[in-house]
Amino acid sequence: MLPPEPNLDALRGIFDARRHAAGWTYEELAERSGISRQTLLNLASGRYRGDLRTWLLLARAFETDLDTLLAPVWE
Image 1 (cartoon, rainbow, N blue to C red):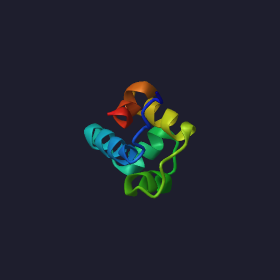
Image 2 (image 1 turned 90 degrees about the horizontal axis):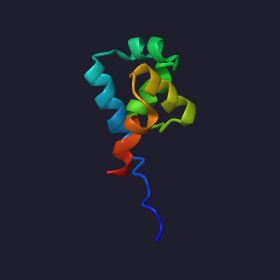
Image 3 (image 1 turned 90 degrees about the vertical axis):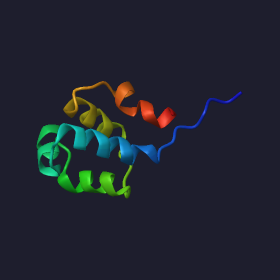
């Protein structure tokens, strides 16, 4: 039996929910994470899903671990 596939379409929602919960603008998140504002806008629009480095930096900015941040992709 194969393990389930992650729902990568959920990444956009994860990003939006965390940013809104923190109450940060794209500029604030860019400063806190070191990720460019344009990349953050691309994540929010679904044009870019990010790579491992992107999500590690976001986890650090949101003060959580990667597993917790990305857990919704398995739901």
